[in-house]
Image (cartoon, rainbow, N blue to C red; front, top):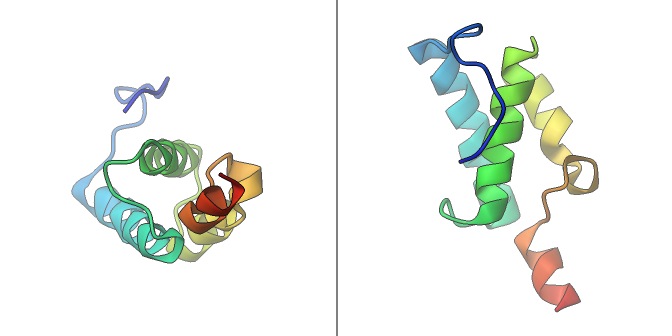
Length: 83
């Protein structure tokens, strides 16, 4: 995963990882994405970025990444339909 996040300035605790992972896993299921896909990497990077920017509530994180068009992350079904 590639990102410009400064982990030393904003370390992520095990609790933080659990929150991020719960949203990540839910979004993977919702979007029918493989964990190893580029979309999943972009989603993970976006979630970490939002979390480090101060968005700490799981529901708020989900709402922030819910609209694939605003996050630049496509739903796999929509992506397949366009091909």
